Length: 461
Image (tube, rainbow, N blue to C red; front, side):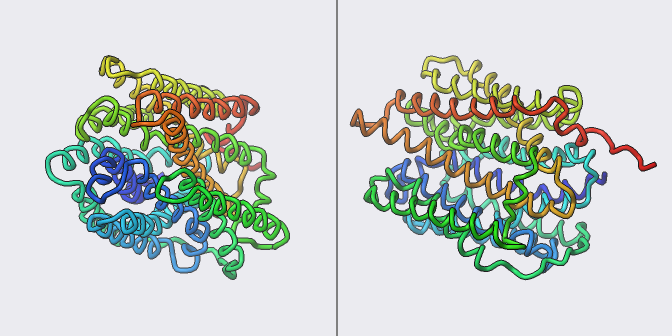
């Protein structure tokens, strides 16, 4: 397996992960500057995820129609433009719009990168390839929190978005010079009806669940949007099952391992999705840390994650996919429980040590689940499987952000007054319960699940 391809593709992951972790440490400062409250900024976080959910379904079609390298370069350019727009935003509305533009670029970057990797890599090399793809991407979370906190504390939060400009330019140059154009698969006609139905369903559902408890809008707005999203989603399911070549083919859920990866992974992401939003906010609002100080704490999880990438293949080969995914989700759930017990008196070395361990096993989950999605999927259906899994990832992470923020708001509303530490603790305990459901579902897998991903297929007679 050539390492240069996943390393070049990882430029996109580096930029996306850097952006996501940088903004998490700066929410309080951004909210103060643009005249809103930190909880309302979850709308800006979910706007990015909404854009991903809308445009990821056409990423495979775009790559086959216009060429993966061309689409990848344009996507990075759009992401850079969205970053510039974020830096110059002066209100919640403009900031949300800029994050949506970023999401349009991100919707094409990571899925196209994964698709290129899956189509160019033998199944038994896929775990190692996914690890190489995500190693540079994990440098972003290591550098992001302390660097973003430093910029926000000592300069201005605007600089956390401006740093994407040189990174994006370097990425475009590397892709242009080193990434060969892949052979295209005939994409067929674009399913515009399915795109409109599914995109509207995703956008309304994520928007509705995110704003249902925001003080800036009447709750009825969120309820109506959520219900409409569910109705349109059901209409899409009916349409897709009756259409020979839908936008993304839900019939792939008949494959048991693919179905397990999607369903069990959804509960994991429901539990983990709100951590980048809630944990830095708790450290700043309840522990009295500055953005720089909270960033220096939260980056510890990424240290554990990058260590995991070098041993992921051996862990799955030794433990098997079922056992590794069970341990990874269980440890991640315990990490959420620990967050629900932290107080300002908790020793920082203990918090950092737990973050490193939990970050290690979270990384094992992400590497393994990214490969396990394709364990019983052939190359012909890899594009569809990639689209379904990536849309599911973004929807459930967005729903996790909405769930975590909603619990925080509900707890605060019932008690009244300012946010207190108990509000954050309740949110972390509920999210831990979501994550444990994922553990229970992965325990139902057979012991040999995914074995073909860690060893070469037998030679044909």
